Amino acid sequence: MKKMKKKKAVCFPLALLMLALACLAACSGGGAGDPAASDTADAVSVRPSETDAPAPETEPPDPDTVHDLPADLDFEGADFVMYAWSGYRSLANEEIGETLNDAQYDVKRSTEELLNVSITELLGGANVESLKIRDYYFSGDTEIHVSMEYDREAFLHAIEDLYTPLSQTKYVDLTKKYWSPAITERLAIGEYELMALGSFQLEAFTRAGCIFMNLAVAENVGAEVPYDLVKEGKWTFDAIARYSGLAFYDVNGDGKVTPDDSTTFGSSDHRQTTLNFMSGAGVPFMGKDENNLPAITAFGNEKLVNVIEWVKSMFFNPMTSVASAADMDSMITVNMFTHDRQLFLIGTLNDMRGDLREMDSVYAVFPIPKYDEAQENYYARIKDTVFPMLFNFAEDPDMDSAVLEAMSAYAYQNLIPALVETSLQKRYNNDPRSVENIQLVFDSRIIELSDMMLWDEFGDTGLWRLMYQDKAISSWLASIRNKAEGKLEGYIEDIEDYFASLT
Figure 1 (cartoon, rainbow, N blue to C red):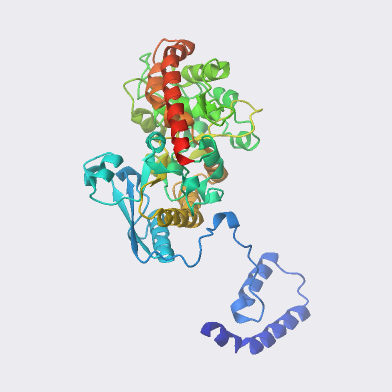
Figure 2: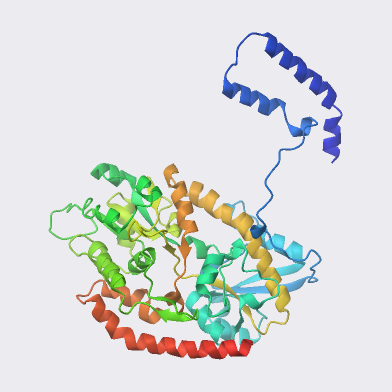
């Protein structure tokens, strides 16, 4: 305020000077002049802090991005402890001058100041001798308030009555944008929302599936870069299939596909390739029945079988692909892509912060293709999702839910822009035309129920091995049907018992 008063004292002489300059310009007969120069002059000479002009109006923040926690909430310095596996750290304890770390620290600091709490993140692994969260909690060493759980463990522990459905807490508002309502609704079971995606967990966003295109290879083989196809909604299975074999070249002429050759397609994780394209085509293994309870949709689904067969022939063809059962970690194809010996790499946004970070050539980012042009949206499956889960026997569940609400709101306002706009679109991205596509991938994220409930039946390992076997997809589905349906039937009984205990 003192600064503003001091500036206002010189406002009148400044206004006279500006008027004199305006008259001089009008009388000079110099015509309109350079528009850019005029804009610059205005920007320099008319500053709200130096005149009586009001500050420019700004749009009010979207209410869906701001928490509605009571202003008088005060938890008197209480401890709040989060448990997370070390690879999924959500918070930072100090500023170090790194964009994402400092944004995470800001989320923690802002929440602590708002609610008068002290937040600690207990990392799993070596710190707790790799004990499962339930075993560690009941050991009594530390009271844990919230656990960051893997998708499949989160669901199982929820129906075992270990966690409180977030929709039943006092302060968590799952209708807010920072809880990803579309994803939360997709995960809802019956009338309950057992879990939601908190905006403070970066890995839950960066593990979204996408496709990278090496532009140096594209130029070398004369391949069209499909920016316009994506924008027009025409980036489909047929569109990417037209590139098949385009960049394949047997460099050493030995008649075999080796890492020294050049290929068209690869993946940063072969195990996820089929699952990514199934989600992209809108044909997951599981959906919902009329009661909003989980149901298997894979059996008898001809489109699903067609998609899996297409993926197998396109990306796992031994005549054109280096992918093999021995290359489970997919580093062979990643290395080929980064060294300009591969046109496309199927991966996740997280690869931009990892293996592609030091890549010399420019690469473009695209969403997973749609099945066909009739499909309305692109879909980016998130693998290994992590959810914040609140223990149902916590001593102060109101405090716990208030902390989660504040952290998710602050993260959406500050951490997510730091991730998407600063890191992914600018720092790690080296292709200006991919900025919109990165946002598109981020906005089209989805989570599959089968990843949470029937991982052993429909997860990456069994399906990935099938890609290298001479076995019909329909036969494989028939072989696992009884086990999958029996397992889900047991889950439904547990869910119904759990829901009965909540009423």
